[in-house]
Length: 101
Image 1 (cartoon, rainbow, N blue to C red):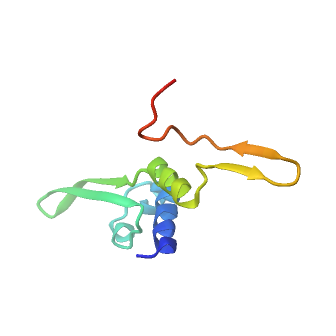
Image 2: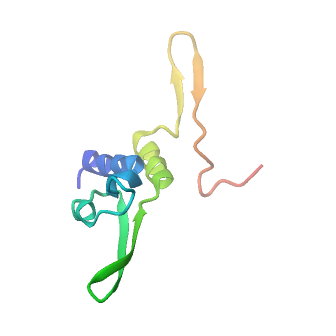
């Protein structure tokens, strides 16, 4: 898998919308689930006989996908702009091994 492909998958998860899997009446449409994208984490269907009585769709973790994309793109790093000496710090959380002050 290339870096670009991994970023594309993470972006699709971050953009995932439940409405992509619903029909015009707001019910889960199995045909849309079949044509799912990487944002779909889980689909379950409980049936009684041949009739579906409950369908459940679970999407991927959007915040985790955004966090992963930020790390892959270096958005969680400090950037120093040249020219006027402006420093911009983007705080995306503490590194896992950082001790609180």
